[in-house]
Image 1 (cartoon, rainbow over the protein chains, first blue to last red):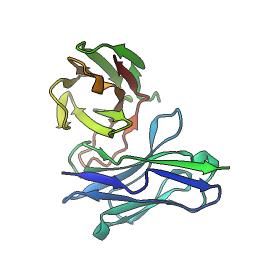
Image 2: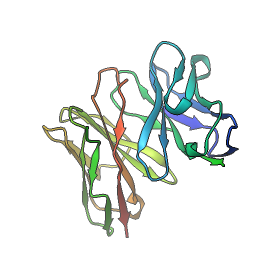
Image 3: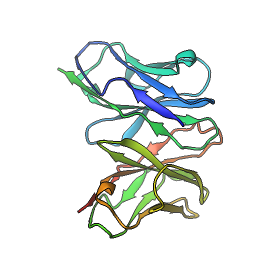
Image 4: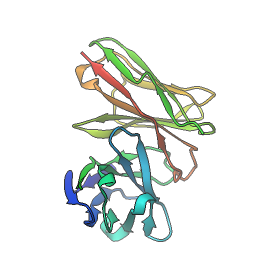
Length: 114
Length: 115
Protein backbone atom coordinates (compact mmCIF):
# COMPACT_ATOMS: atom_id res chain seq x y z
CA UNK A 1 0.00 0.00 0.00
CA UNK A 2 1.13 3.53 -0.69
CA UNK A 3 2.19 5.68 2.21
CA UNK A 4 3.81 9.05 2.72
CA UNK A 5 5.90 10.00 5.71
CA UNK A 6 6.77 13.55 6.66
CA UNK A 7 9.58 13.77 9.15
CA UNK A 8 8.64 16.88 11.07
CA UNK A 9 5.20 17.77 12.36
CA UNK A 10 6.15 21.22 13.60
CA UNK A 11 8.99 23.49 12.51
CA UNK A 12 9.81 26.93 13.87
CA UNK A 13 12.25 29.15 11.99
CA UNK A 14 13.32 32.76 12.02
CA UNK A 15 12.99 34.83 8.88
CA UNK A 16 15.85 34.34 6.40
CA UNK A 17 16.62 30.86 7.74
CA UNK A 18 16.79 28.01 5.27
CA UNK A 19 14.06 25.41 5.17
CA UNK A 20 14.11 21.74 4.36
CA UNK A 21 11.08 19.53 4.95
CA UNK A 22 11.56 15.83 4.59
CA UNK A 23 9.20 13.51 2.74
CA UNK A 24 9.55 9.80 2.05
CA UNK A 25 7.06 7.66 0.23
CA UNK A 26 6.43 3.97 -0.10
CA UNK A 27 5.25 2.69 -3.45
CA UNK A 28 6.62 0.13 -5.84
CA UNK A 29 5.59 1.63 -9.15
CA UNK A 30 5.98 4.91 -11.00
CA UNK A 31 4.64 7.84 -9.05
CA UNK A 32 3.80 11.48 -9.34
CA UNK A 33 4.91 13.60 -6.39
CA UNK A 34 3.43 16.81 -5.05
CA UNK A 35 3.86 19.39 -2.36
CA UNK A 36 0.79 21.32 -1.30
CA UNK A 37 0.53 24.26 1.04
CA UNK A 38 -2.34 25.47 3.17
CA UNK A 39 -1.99 29.05 4.37
CA UNK A 40 -4.09 30.05 7.37
CA UNK A 41 -7.69 30.46 6.28
CA UNK A 42 -6.99 29.52 2.67
CA UNK A 43 -7.55 26.58 0.36
CA UNK A 44 -5.02 23.86 -0.11
CA UNK A 45 -2.94 24.79 -3.15
CA UNK A 46 -0.19 23.21 -5.19
CA UNK A 47 3.37 24.37 -4.54
CA UNK A 48 5.10 22.11 -7.03
CA UNK A 49 4.96 18.69 -8.61
CA UNK A 50 7.25 16.15 -10.18
CA UNK A 51 6.41 13.44 -12.67
CA UNK A 52 9.43 13.16 -14.98
CA UNK A 53 12.57 14.88 -16.19
CA UNK A 54 14.86 17.00 -14.04
CA UNK A 55 14.57 15.66 -10.49
CA UNK A 56 15.02 19.18 -9.13
CA UNK A 57 11.73 20.98 -9.58
CA UNK A 58 10.97 24.58 -8.88
CA UNK A 59 7.63 25.80 -7.67
CA UNK A 60 5.94 28.99 -6.65
CA UNK A 61 7.28 31.47 -4.10
CA UNK A 62 10.89 30.28 -4.35
CA UNK A 63 10.27 26.71 -3.25
CA UNK A 64 12.00 23.75 -4.83
CA UNK A 65 12.04 20.02 -4.25
CA UNK A 66 14.40 17.25 -5.18
CA UNK A 67 13.29 13.78 -6.15
CA UNK A 68 15.80 11.09 -5.16
CA UNK A 69 14.46 7.84 -6.54
CA UNK A 70 16.92 5.60 -4.70
CA UNK A 71 15.84 7.07 -1.37
CA UNK A 72 12.13 7.33 -2.20
CA UNK A 73 12.39 10.92 -1.07
CA UNK A 74 10.99 14.24 -2.25
CA UNK A 75 12.25 16.91 0.12
CA UNK A 76 11.06 20.49 -0.03
CA UNK A 77 13.51 23.35 0.30
CA UNK A 78 13.62 27.12 0.39
CA UNK A 79 16.86 29.04 0.87
CA UNK A 80 15.38 31.90 2.87
CA UNK A 81 11.95 31.78 4.47
CA UNK A 82 9.67 34.73 5.07
CA UNK A 83 7.02 35.32 7.68
CA UNK A 84 4.41 34.82 4.94
CA UNK A 85 5.58 31.21 4.52
CA UNK A 86 3.88 30.33 7.79
CA UNK A 87 1.53 27.54 6.73
CA UNK A 88 1.00 23.80 6.75
CA UNK A 89 2.84 21.82 4.09
CA UNK A 90 1.75 18.46 2.73
CA UNK A 91 3.69 15.99 0.67
CA UNK A 92 1.55 13.75 -1.56
CA UNK A 93 1.90 10.91 -4.05
CA UNK A 94 -0.25 9.18 -6.61
CA UNK A 95 0.40 6.34 -8.99
CA UNK A 96 1.19 7.30 -12.58
CA UNK A 97 -1.86 6.59 -14.66
CA UNK A 98 -3.87 5.52 -11.65
CA UNK A 99 -6.19 8.44 -11.49
CA UNK A 100 -6.20 10.74 -8.51
CA UNK A 101 -5.99 8.34 -5.60
CA UNK A 102 -3.62 10.76 -3.93
CA UNK A 103 -2.07 9.81 -0.62
CA UNK A 104 -1.06 12.69 1.63
CA UNK A 105 1.48 12.87 4.40
CA UNK A 106 0.42 14.04 7.84
CA UNK A 107 1.60 17.57 7.16
CA UNK A 108 4.23 19.87 8.65
CA UNK A 109 3.22 23.06 10.37
CA UNK A 110 5.79 25.75 9.71
CA UNK A 111 5.88 28.87 11.83
CA UNK A 112 8.23 31.64 10.77
CA UNK A 113 9.13 34.22 13.37
CA UNK A 114 9.41 37.79 12.12
CA UNK B 1 -12.12 31.31 -14.04
CA UNK B 2 -14.22 30.36 -11.03
CA UNK B 3 -12.62 27.99 -8.56
CA UNK B 4 -13.96 24.84 -6.98
CA UNK B 5 -17.05 25.55 -4.92
CA UNK B 6 -18.47 23.45 -2.13
CA UNK B 7 -21.81 23.71 -0.42
CA UNK B 8 -22.70 24.00 2.30
CA UNK B 9 -19.64 25.42 4.01
CA UNK B 10 -20.75 24.39 7.48
CA UNK B 11 -23.08 21.68 8.64
CA UNK B 12 -24.16 20.38 12.03
CA UNK B 13 -25.88 17.02 12.25
CA UNK B 14 -26.66 14.49 14.94
CA UNK B 15 -25.62 10.87 15.13
CA UNK B 16 -27.63 8.56 12.93
CA UNK B 17 -28.61 11.23 10.43
CA UNK B 18 -27.38 11.35 6.87
CA UNK B 19 -25.78 14.22 4.98
CA UNK B 20 -25.15 15.21 1.37
CA UNK B 21 -22.31 17.49 0.38
CA UNK B 22 -21.95 19.11 -3.01
CA UNK B 23 -18.96 20.07 -5.13
CA UNK B 24 -18.88 22.09 -8.35
CA UNK B 25 -15.57 21.67 -10.17
CA UNK B 26 -13.75 24.18 -12.30
CA UNK B 27 -15.33 24.45 -15.73
CA UNK B 28 -13.84 21.85 -18.07
CA UNK B 29 -12.59 19.60 -15.30
CA UNK B 30 -13.84 16.03 -15.46
CA UNK B 31 -12.23 14.53 -12.39
CA UNK B 32 -13.52 15.20 -8.89
CA UNK B 33 -11.91 13.74 -5.80
CA UNK B 34 -13.08 13.85 -2.21
CA UNK B 35 -10.92 13.89 0.90
CA UNK B 36 -11.58 13.85 4.62
CA UNK B 37 -9.33 16.06 6.73
CA UNK B 38 -9.11 15.60 10.49
CA UNK B 39 -6.48 16.69 13.01
CA UNK B 40 -5.68 13.10 13.93
CA UNK B 41 -5.69 11.40 10.53
CA UNK B 42 -4.73 14.25 8.23
CA UNK B 43 -6.00 14.17 4.65
CA UNK B 44 -7.48 10.85 3.63
CA UNK B 45 -8.68 9.98 0.18
CA UNK B 46 -12.34 9.00 -0.07
CA UNK B 47 -13.00 8.50 -3.78
CA UNK B 48 -12.50 9.95 -7.24
CA UNK B 49 -15.06 10.31 -9.99
CA UNK B 50 -14.24 10.78 -13.65
CA UNK B 51 -16.86 11.12 -16.35
CA UNK B 52 -19.63 9.99 -13.98
CA UNK B 53 -17.76 6.81 -12.99
CA UNK B 54 -15.99 6.06 -9.75
CA UNK B 55 -12.38 5.60 -10.81
CA UNK B 56 -10.74 5.18 -7.43
CA UNK B 57 -11.86 4.43 -3.92
CA UNK B 58 -10.19 4.82 -0.55
CA UNK B 59 -10.57 2.73 2.56
CA UNK B 60 -13.79 4.12 3.97
CA UNK B 61 -16.89 2.15 4.97
CA UNK B 62 -19.86 1.84 2.66
CA UNK B 63 -21.65 4.59 4.58
CA UNK B 64 -19.60 6.97 2.46
CA UNK B 65 -20.79 7.16 -1.11
CA UNK B 66 -20.66 9.56 -3.98
CA UNK B 67 -21.78 10.26 -7.47
CA UNK B 68 -20.99 12.55 -10.35
CA UNK B 69 -23.39 14.13 -12.77
CA UNK B 70 -23.04 14.74 -16.47
CA UNK B 71 -21.94 18.34 -15.83
CA UNK B 72 -19.13 16.98 -13.61
CA UNK B 73 -20.69 18.27 -10.41
CA UNK B 74 -20.33 15.75 -7.64
CA UNK B 75 -22.07 14.89 -4.42
CA UNK B 76 -20.96 12.76 -1.54
CA UNK B 77 -23.31 11.21 0.96
CA UNK B 78 -22.63 9.93 4.44
CA UNK B 79 -25.35 7.82 6.00
CA UNK B 80 -25.83 6.89 9.64
CA UNK B 81 -23.47 9.57 10.86
CA UNK B 82 -21.05 8.81 13.68
CA UNK B 83 -19.20 11.23 15.95
CA UNK B 84 -15.97 10.29 14.20
CA UNK B 85 -17.28 11.61 10.90
CA UNK B 86 -16.78 15.15 12.15
CA UNK B 87 -14.21 16.58 9.77
CA UNK B 88 -13.46 18.99 6.98
CA UNK B 89 -14.49 17.40 3.69
CA UNK B 90 -12.49 18.67 0.76
CA UNK B 91 -13.26 18.37 -2.89
CA UNK B 92 -10.64 18.70 -5.61
CA UNK B 93 -11.06 18.91 -9.34
CA UNK B 94 -8.71 18.36 -12.24
CA UNK B 95 -8.79 17.74 -15.96
CA UNK B 96 -8.35 14.03 -15.24
CA UNK B 97 -5.42 13.35 -17.55
CA UNK B 98 -4.56 9.71 -18.12
CA UNK B 99 -1.14 10.04 -16.50
CA UNK B 100 -2.58 11.76 -13.39
CA UNK B 101 0.01 14.49 -13.75
CA UNK B 102 -2.35 17.43 -13.93
CA UNK B 103 -2.95 19.76 -11.02
CA UNK B 104 -5.73 19.22 -8.54
CA UNK B 105 -7.52 22.36 -7.41
CA UNK B 106 -9.08 22.22 -3.99
CA UNK B 107 -12.24 23.83 -2.75
CA UNK B 108 -12.69 25.51 0.64
CA UNK B 109 -14.24 22.43 2.17
CA UNK B 110 -17.39 21.66 4.10
CA UNK B 111 -16.97 21.57 7.85
CA UNK B 112 -19.20 18.79 9.20
CA UNK B 113 -19.85 18.55 12.91
CA UNK B 114 -21.67 15.50 14.24
CA UNK B 115 -23.21 15.86 17.70
